[in-house]
Amino acid sequence: MQRIYKKILSLAEHQHAKRFLALIAFIESSFFPIPPDVMIIPMVLAKPSSWWRIALTCTLFSVIGGVAAYFIGLLLFETAAMPLIRFYGYQGKVSEFNEMYQHWGGWAVFLAGLTPFPYKIITIASGMAQLNLALFVSLSVLSRGLRFFAVSFLLYYFGDKIRTLLEKYFGLVTGITGCCLILIYFWLKS
Image (cartoon, rainbow, N blue to C red; front, top):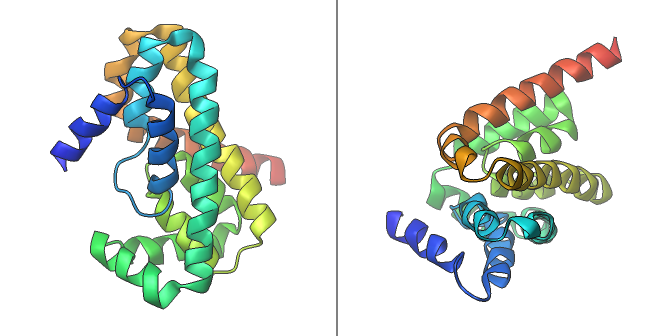
């Protein structure tokens, strides 16, 4: 896994880095284990003025990959989705997402899309649960866009100073953000 991680970091320096970012964002949404944030960080630090293009590329291709995985969950659950889920040992994550989905509905897609929760599980399980495709796409655009634009903007604004913090505390920061969004949701609902 460490070798794959280092290879992805080296792709961030390539002249076709945006194409590689698009590919990583697409495949991470359906089967690849390493999130595109690994490429976003060095790419934005190398070209800060391109932060929004990098975030946009990552968002669009993450959502497109998510739609592909949605259809894997919808149409090929037994033949393609379950073997992939077993390969990564994510059976418990599917159950966890299904519980979130039963409790939160479509908001589960939004919240999980912001956090380090494996997005591929969200996409496949959403297809399996036959979540409304338009709702799935809308919530994926919002959550993935918010995540990738926030990371890119923070890197643009603070530069290398925030890199270590993002790499070390990304899960914690997104978890706290998710909790805040849940609290806001309940506050607005009451």
